[in-house]
Length: 432
Image (cartoon, rainbow, N blue to C red):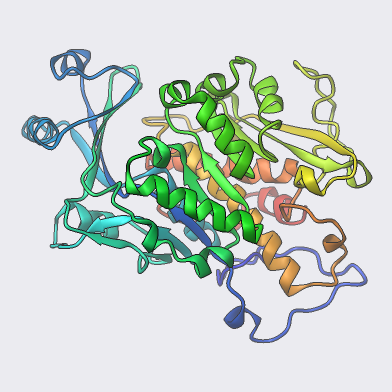
């Protein structure tokens, strides 16, 4: 069984088991397998600055703040003149994840958002398109009279990131530009909390409309949490929104603390399962956690050593494939944890984008589930109404490996696909 996409690399699943059927010829041309994401389209401008620079421009260290056009342009020109800009890239958490998903799967993804109507060679909109995979479909974007949004990322000597956002047209997406048919057929709908930051902005109403469509069509809604201060400022709102619409939630340890009030990542993941069905929690140098549900009948015990942290034997059923809680007769909470691949890269210049890379891997596996259901309907795997193609343990390996590649490339987006084979890692993953 092969993941969706037309990549030449041979990542095959075992097909020798009895009861499996081969795929019909021409299948890929008739069935859609794509991811849809709503994003505030931005160009990321990364720069290295000292603490006094932040103080001089009234920027709160480690936070994300809104800059008006004049302030953003003044800061940009100063950075440019002093040679402090490291690079200008297509940005946005959802945009990064869509790009990474398309690079990993070699398959289409659809971006929804607003982009400036007048694009010229060398401007910010041009840079966004130039740095986005050709597999990301931009044809549904709403044209706007406003300029492109910018996200200035200030990296201080300790490696901490501070953001200054100049909105531009990033919130202009109107509900009329939400394509209902496209969302209904998607493998998942990807959103972020930033889209809901200001309820008066058109993009907020558009996001709610898209989530309503996905909810009715049983399309998984995947949400990434924004900065921790944003969650703290609207905790009740986001908790209610997640509980109503979200299937899978992705966050880091600081965002998890803001949402749950718990410092322990495993307990935070457990608590978050009261709101949604699947949780991805990245914890920097300590790797990542995955948490979900499985019906007691389909729980698969791990063959790895059992581990005790804040939850005894938390990884006991990590070989299970996660399910929606509503599809379980007797739901069991399941967990998996993995340390950074090979201990992480020797040199890490910037951690920006690592979480987006991990989430892209999770989304690739969710898409593979839909692909497999349609292409091999009589497979024994389809007896279980799971969310993913692979087990929680194997998804964590994949997500961990993609995060490593992002960090090693020192880029917020994958610049290349994963190597075809690396010892037995790829074989172990795809054969899960």
